[in-house]
Length: 80
Image (tube, rainbow, N blue to C red; front, top):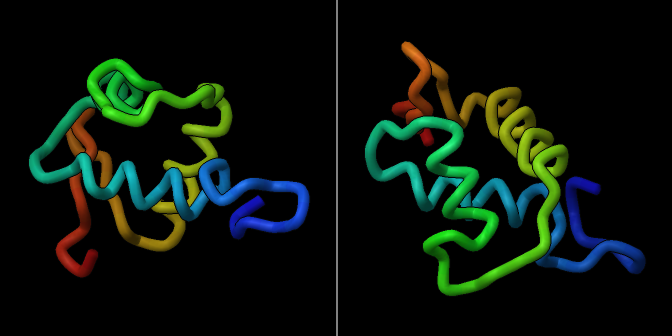
């Protein structure tokens, strides 16, 4: 689930989704704007990704200390 495996493609692994999320956080953004871009709204790579899977990737990044949520905006942690 976190890493790609025999039954989980590299594109759906939580670390891959999390890395895409981190790449979008060049400035503070709302969760919904990041979701729109990750699911294919503005991204060049369109993908089928459920909101549940997106939230799991956010949870993983938060637990790793890579992102913060301040006043409704997602930001990268200084150490990320």
